[in-house]
Image (cartoon, rainbow, N blue to C red; front, side, top):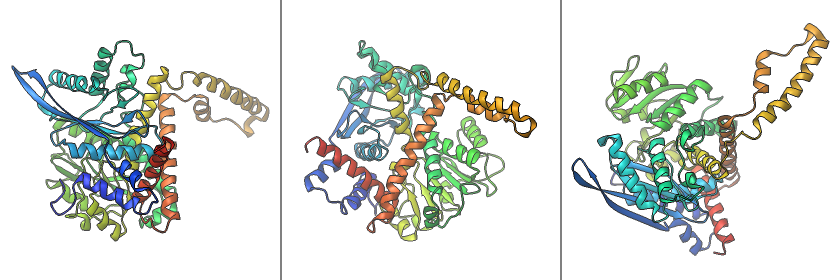
Length: 476
């Protein structure tokens, strides 16, 4: 929670929106239309559990319908409230516009601690929540498409999809009512890793531009960069794992609920994740220093800081002590508006949440398209690609026989070249392309406009301009 002397999460989103529109030429009416949340539905429903009726409160907020369906996750957490859901819905609008997925912004939440209920009870609660939303078209393939968020995952999305199908028995596109489903329920390969993979691709694209890297007082590539990750949930785990295993980054710190682990020589992300799954916390993990006060590790010396859990973890209280020259917001709103100003004045480069964690909604878009097309990606073209590549290999091998020992094809080249792209490779390719293109659109604004000095305002400018263009096209 933000300290009393700085804005709430929702106020932070509005303040950052204001910073952007102040340097845009938008008609006042259109500016207000883009800013406000269109509608928020609050539902209170009862479920008979453990011999009595328990009442639960849930929300579904629709921020903007400049494109439909609207898109946004459903989170299960005790702190869920209307302001938080509306702020997250607004971020979804801008996020979808920035990465050019054809959705408006929405968000949902249920005030519940999922750890307090067993699987069967949680299913009953989730299905009843879904029922309340479905009957008001707040879950629908053409109108409102949820996805996983904090406290939810593939399991919950499968329950929601099945609940929708039970209520809409003749809808051939029912599986497209929600994304983030398991593969056997209409999901898509690469969705679970998508947000963390997107963080990796965002950092790769940042490090492709030496001028940008220099602004963060860094140099070179991701190889050898010291990384601290706050939150080893789905997003933080995948981001840290891929950066460590594929890019040579050194994960020196991992912060969790029960404190933090720190080792300047590097932590084994897979081992920490396994320990966390077994023990419920990081305390006791060998080969690292455990600190009960986990937030203090945010302030340790590192090259890249990845807040990947809750909002408002970097605030006015600790912003001045943050040493990382580069912060990438894998969570939604981890840096408050007040902290953002402090960090900018220090020269810290922040890769903003609406871009950095857009991998999830990007791959959700691919899943939605897959569900509507009713065919797995790669099914039509994979073998044709392999046959075409085989022609090239056959010709090269004919030359190989002609030239003898002077020139030969490496077996590993042949294996890689002959293999057609499967769904996972196509999803990763599409995500990589999306993250590159979105970064370049922000970067162009960041470098070309004298009145833009950070990537967050650049991201808002690109996103708001695209939303405004959609509204103008509708005649507003």
